[in-house]
Length: 395
Image (cartoon, rainbow, N blue to C red; front, top):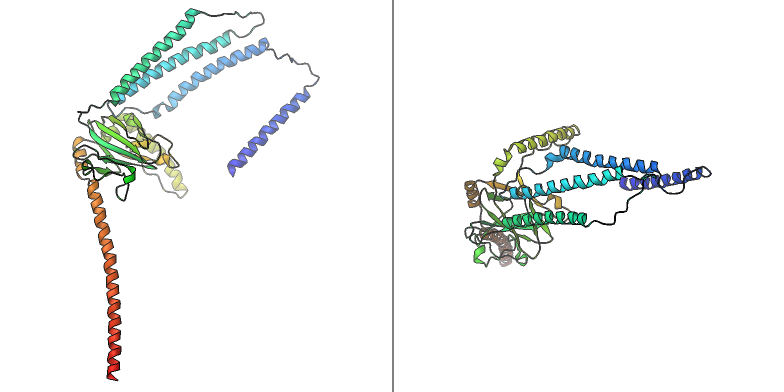
């Protein structure tokens, strides 16, 4: 309702301003004015200074933005290939910013310097093959180098040798949560299909596949430092995107197909928490939370919990109403801690058997109670009949 009122007020304000301009035009009837619609030297001077002022505004705001919000950008990458990705990104930014400074600077400076003047005549310059070659060849070469470097980086990141020792993990996306499936001892993921989803088997794993017998399904992702992890990704419903911001990794999860991505973590969770920039960042966040908590407590609310850094797996596609909350905690362990954690997890086969065993006693319990009740009823009827027959016999 408030939004509607704001819109109505804005519309009425626009109408009022429009009417005021019409009244102003009427008051100017009969007065001397220049209706030629040809820019005068004064108009050209004003436009030239505005152009030059806008150029200054662009660069002042850019510098201010870098100083104000530059610390919010991702910092140290937590994967081996992250350094390559950041390098490619930084080179691209430097090139874009350099070209922007030169071209926009010349554009607005020329607009200011060569503004219209009635005492000057514009020079008609038809063409110049030399200039055309310069501003065609240079961008082409720069873009070709960037594209080739990008392809080199992409191929290095995406290449997984068939004989390479990797950890196979499936990431399963659905509205609005992530589930991970580990390949188990054989390091081969069992086949899966959404048509096989039933009960505990929420990922539709084909339990008739021998490779699926040791698969492990979890809701919190653990990966070891220094070991390449090969992720295979599926989606149950709509298009999702598996995004690991600190690992510089992202891949779409498409219904009906399997996509993949691999990387090597370089910092455990505890190590990344101890990096100086992260310590400072967490301290700043908790400072803001403390201020917010004081306000909430003053209003009778509950204080916010202190923030602790964790790696996260996010969905980077707008997949529905709760898209913002689709995330999974990612823990990077030392190789020893990872093996210990994984050894404590039960396989999907064990989970299915446990669920089936839990259902049988319940069903048995219901049947025994029913049988017991029926027997008691029959016994009571028989006892009653016997008593009546005994009384009749006595008479």
